[in-house]
Amino acid sequence: MLNKHQYLTPREIVKELDKYIIGQKNAKRNVAIALRNRWRRMSVPTEMKKEIIPNNILMIGATGVGKTEIARRLANLADAPFSKVEASKFTEVGYVGRDVESMVRDLVEQAVNLVKTSKQEEVKEKAALLVEDLILDALIPPIRSGQSAAISSEDTEMPQNDAELNERTRERFREKIRSGELDHRKIEINIRKPVNPGVGMIGGGMMDESSMINLQEMIGNMMPKKNKKRKVTIQEAKRILQEEEAAKLIDMDEVKDEAIHKAENTGIIFIDEIDKIAGGSGKQSGPDVSREGVQRDLLPVVEGTAVNTKYGVIKTDHILFIAAGAFHVSKPSDLIPELQGRFPIRVELENLTKDDFYHILKEPKNALTKQYEALFNAEEVSLDFQDEALHEIAEIAFKVNSEVENIGARRLHTVMSHLLNELLFDMPDVLAPNAQVVITRELVSERLDELVKTKDLSEYIL
Ligand SMILES: Nc1ncnc2c1ncn2[C@@H]1O[C@H](COP(=O)(O)OP(=O)(O)O)[C@@H](O)[C@H]1O
Ligand SMILES: [Mg+2]
Image 1 (tube, rainbow, N blue to C red):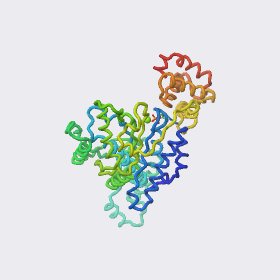
Image 2: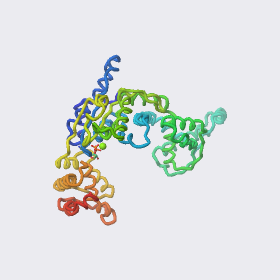
Image 3: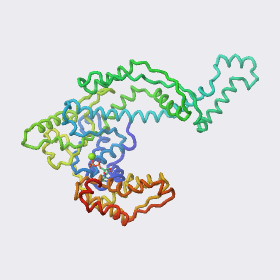
Image 4: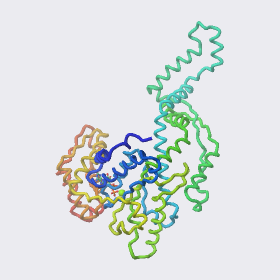
């Protein structure tokens, strides 16, 4: 049940996060503790286990400093189901209170996907054998056993009877199928296709999401599954049949139970823009009331309640909630006290410096420079950034952030895309395979200086 990542110590968790996120040491340490506490809780005797609540975290920091990234990478590390929701969407017109529960349903959906994927992995080889049989049946139909028995009883000494010949041919072809030699040959296969009920609109706005889903599933199950014959290449057949055969080998009830359990005990829900539902103190105008209403709706979910999903009932008591917001206008203390109490750990994320930008460009496993190098490599063009050029890009991003609008590390994306735009267009027609591109400081200045100087231009382009 616990996979190896969940055994990571807080120090190891921070080390893993360091591979993707620059700085923000305090936030990393606290999410690491929260994650490890989860595992610690699992090893506690049952009585006490129920008492220990997750250390929900409130991340406070400007946009683009790594809040979402930290939460997402953490979930990934823990192989934990993760869902993300913007709190402000619940203040939009037309939302009913119950809808806050949709974040829990999303989480369960993610959990089901995770469990299904891992089960599919478990039955992969077994399913692959069955798929080979099906493809063989289409290529060389087997001789029915009754037939072959009759033949073999008459001339037992003959090794070359039809059944054996057939079997041997099949084995030869099995090799060919496995090696991919026949991938382009076409065969006819049966595909089971549920008939699309197409009744998504039943009930219109009158029903909430969960009953809508249930109804749809119910109708889907009532509909006959239609067998459809299709001519496809063996390569395609492998893919389609693998999915079908794997599905047949997996017990969906088991998947549902495991998914609920996984979501209950390891799920992480990220609630973004929580500051947008914190009412400014004193004012009792319309929107403030609705914001407080959303907080009241949110409270039971965070405190622990049972939510109905199409996979079963899930208790939210031990889900880890990570809330995030800039809190430029409102303060955490503007949240209703009950909700404040449910987010006992506060971490402030630092604004990123010019130097941080430089490291962000260069070091994370998924660093932008690495992403672009990979894109260029796809055209067999090499791309290198000189160190000075990276400093220059960082400088420009920082400057535009302070002069136009601070969008944090997101600015690096727009700057880089503008810098490389022309080169990306020129490949491979003008900039042919085997070309080598070196990004120098001069090139960066040449492409970007004009834009940075003109505020109007940078507002639109960078
Ligand atoms: N400290 C950081 N280290 C590395 N990349 C970062 C950092 N902060 C932000 N980024 C990058 O900037 C983008 C936006 O970050 P995100 O975490 O979504 O910001 P927010 O704080 O608004 O949630 C992501 O692509 C992320 O990779
Ligand atoms: Mg974010």
